[in-house]
Amino acid sequence: MELLKVEHLSKVYGKGENEVKALDDVSFLVQQGEFVAIIGPSGSGKSTLLHILGGVDRPTSGHVYLDGKDIYSQNEEQLAIFRRREIGLIYQFYNLIPVLDVEENMTLPVLMDGREVNEERLLELLHVLGLEGRKRHLPNQLSGGQQQRVSIGRALMNAPAIVLADEPTGNLDSKNSQEIMELLKLSNQKYGQTLLVITHDESLALQADRIISIEDGKIARDEVIRR
Image (cartoon, rainbow, N blue to C red; front, side):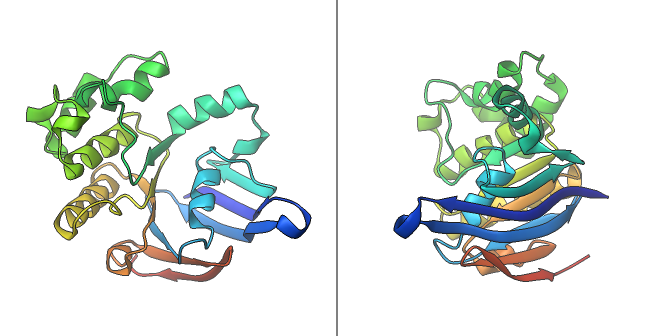
């Protein structure tokens, strides 16, 4: 079933001589439960694409439909609610709140939304992510790999429609990178989570179901690896 539809998406920064076209007429579909890797050189537009898909940065033109809804037809307040409920974001540098412990960081999006924490889901995620013995630890008491596990837990806590990960292994060594990819694959298989992962590492990208290659703001290649 089609979950995400990107239609003639463009993003332009600046004007006149200073104009930079970060995205240029990008269109593609993502099916529910699909694991897609987005690759491309630095400056190719892949992070801009992810931010637009996540409701963080508005496009200059084009449309993004999630589950049939044009996300940019919403006002700012509706868009903020949409981001909290429908999008799970994982960043390269974790973006954890330093004064909150593991459990508090993971449940923050739920609490900000004024909803009760699903304790069963929280306990399951702590177990799956290997964080059961760390739930009262602050971010500075964790390794880089553990901090990234917390950010994955935070992204999954709301059971979002889609998880977007921007270079989630870019700040980790090869062992931790592979462990994080295994956890992302597990979330895809165990929870049926739809994943879009930006990575510069082609060996990690090859673990996805499909690879979309971005060059100069355009899709250069869209290849199914496995079905």
